[in-house]
Length: 243
Ligand code: OAD
Image (tube, rainbow, N blue to C red):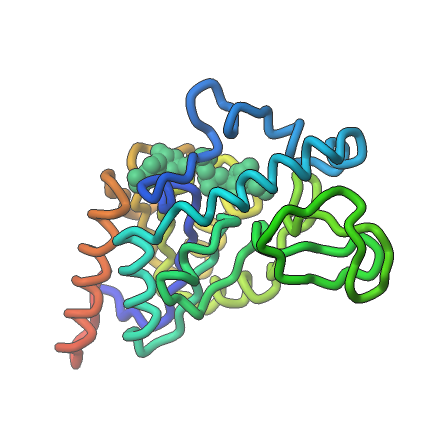
């Protein structure tokens, strides 16, 4: 049994699937009918800004019609009640973790409800449509783009994430296919740093074999069960806890 105090949780599209947000690698490998290269690369933005902006406008607008599910709620509860260090690292660009009430959270692939100025680098909360060449409220340059980390760009918060993984006793991956780096490599990093590793996913992922334990099922079921068990162990804790 491992003594668990510091936890890092990586979430992916699978945790929001039961809220009605499509995963990336759905049938045919398309994301909402588009190839990732057509909507999620700097080249796509330069080649066809209207398409890229419209695509993210649609995804941003769709957020109004969805709600957090029991998996987001359970992680928010863990965030409130866990006495040790905790960091939720989401690859998701939706805001369902925040809406459920999570605070110890970073968005490594950006956020739909944020705009980024390509000129001065400032970020603005953005809830409506973002037409190409919208004016930056900070510097006045017409260079606002969706605040999404495109393929080929550096994910956000990497220093903080790597430091949290280095100090983690437990690394948990929820609802991610393990297809996109650097997130897909976090399990090996955690393992090398001595953390226990657990995967909660609907089906076996590309990285399942890298985890000490892999549990298959819907996030809305597995995550609340896991959180309940962890918090129950914490409340009776004088002895070491298990994952
Ligand atoms: P994927 O679409 O690649 O994988 C989603 C995973 O969730 C799959 O392994 C599914 O089996 C699993 N899944 C689906 N429904 C589930 C459920 N109800 N409960 C539990 N698991 C479920 O999405 P990500 O791994 O998040 O990057 O994709 C990673 C990145 O690729 C995204 O952040 C995005 C994309 O390109 C950027 O936008 C930069």
